[in-house]
Image 1 (tube, helix red, strand yellow):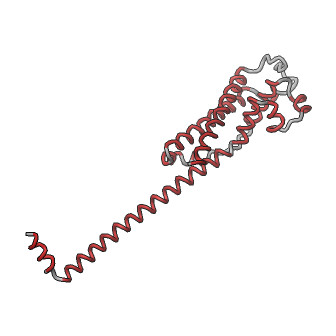
Image 2 (tube, one colour; image 1 turned 180 degrees about the horizontal axis):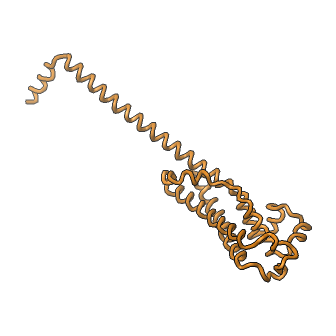
Length: 211
């Protein structure tokens, strides 16, 4: 039977062989073409994912200055006076009656300076899942923590007015008696949130930089 099959193949009309060869070449061409299209689409998707990751990293870095100001105000008031707000010792003494007065005043001032953007994140939330698992988790955690921080700043704005922060107000800042409980609660929320926000952001920006 095998010999018969071989004889049949050798006795085929040359035109049939030509048709078979042409068909095989066409099939090979289709396969190669489909593979090329698939690879091009994969590369395009990889480039889009990389561009999104880079854009998110840049957007997160726009929060650095504000986070630094808040960190100094919450945990290192001496640096806040000199570095973040450029206050001289004389200006500081004229403006604030106590450290608590200074902290809440500077936090209240920063609460009015909401100049950072989240446009890239909010306009691409449906694409976050295309990032690798650790990057996606880091992005969501970083922006969620920034939201928690902003909630604390908004609470501070609602809790105390600028006139209550000025020397001579009804609040006795020298002894710490009388600040609204809402302002004290917002201060605690901001202090906790800013530390966590910086740790999360720096950790994940470092991960993105080396992967």
